[in-house]
Length: 325
Image (tube, rainbow, N blue to C red; front, top):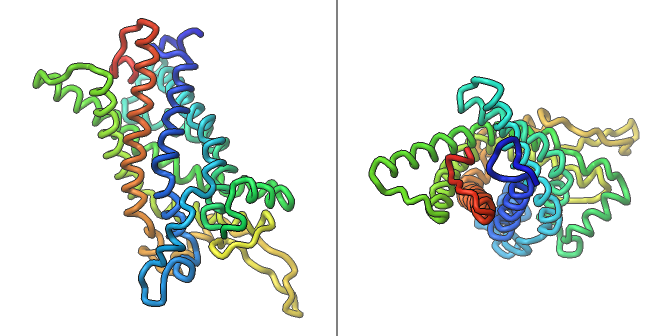
C-alpha cells in the first residue's frame, strides 16, 4: 500500500498500530474506567456507599470488566479511524497552511475525534450501562438486546456529550503532548543522551502523553460526568431500568399517571448535577480519571508510536519520532 501523503507509514501501519494500542489499553485500564463510571452515576451513594459513608467494596469492585466486549469491538475501528484521520489531517494542514504547530495539532485531533466519536458512541452507551448493571444483565450482548427490543436509536444518545468531552480533551492534550515530546527529545540530544532506539522513543512518547493527558482529563472532568449521566439515561430510552441513570423527566397528567417521558438535554443534566452537589459533584471521579488517563494515554500513545515505527522499520525504512510528527 502506498504511503499516506508522503508519510513514512502506510495506512495499514496506522490502522494496525492504533488498533493494537487500543486493545492493549482496554485490557489494562478498563477496571479503573468501570469504577469511575460507578462513582459518577446518579445514585452512587445508595449503590456504592455504606451507611457509614465508606465504600461498599463488593458492589464497587464487582464485575469490573462488565461491558468490555462492546469496547473491544468498537475501539479497534474507532482508534484506527482516529489515528488515520489525525495523521492525514496533520499532513494536509502542514503542506497547505502555515498554522502554528499547537493550532495545527489541535485542529487535527479535533477532526479525528469527530470521526472517532461517531463510531464509538453506541459502544460507550452499552459499556457504561453494562458497567453499572446487575449480574443478571451485565454482558454487552444482553444490554444490546434490550436496546434493540425497545429503541435502537437510543444507542446514539450521548454523541454530543461524548464529542463535547473528547474535543476539548484532545485539543488540549495533543498540542501539549507534541510540544513536550519535542522538548524532551531536544533536551536529550543536547546532553548527548538520545539513542533513537524503539524503546527510548516509546518511553518518551508515553511519559509526555501521560503528563499531557492527566492535565486535560482533570480540566474536562465536568463534561465527562455529564456524558456519563446522559449515557446511563439512554438505558431508559432503550427500555431498560437502571438505578444509576438520570436525564429523564417524567410527564404526568392530571390523574398523576405518567403520560410520557422527555429526554433532558446535556445542559439540563449539567444543571441537575450542579443542584445535587455543585463543583464537588461535577468533579466526582476526577482524580481517578486523571490517574487512569495518565496511565492509559501514556501506554496508548507509547504503544502506538512503537508500533508504527516498528512497522516502518520492518520494511527497511529508517524512521524515528521526527518523521512521524
